[in-house]
Length: 145
Image (cartoon, rainbow, N blue to C red; front, side, top):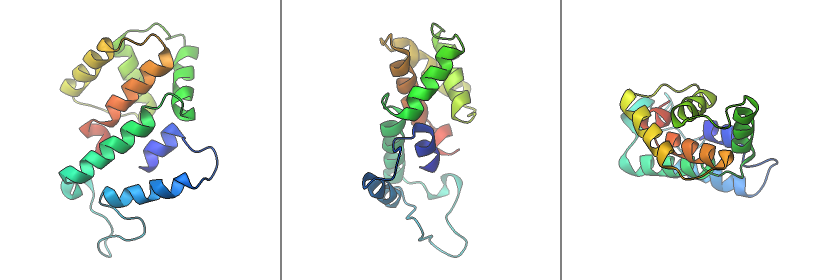
């Protein structure tokens, strides 16, 4: 949640909408300031069930897939400034993975991301970056990072 918001930067200043984002952690199974016991929250896959995973994927997709988010625009601008504006899908996926973490994904996940990027019919780099980030946000590797 925090990493997704720090990356996308959807809120340039404090707003009422931020309260709703705080409530989203409840739906994801980790209520803020209320861990299940004194040891804190469980880590890794042991606390995720199908409902909380769907919430996490939808949350990441909502914020990372928004081409109007300042963080997403900044990533697209950064890639364009590195003169990669016309790079292939594999380079786009690798660049987005690097900008997000870097995140290491399995070969199967990478192949799926590249194939999806190739299928994207958008010419606008910001939109292509947003779509690629949306897909990365839905991967197991991103959700468990």
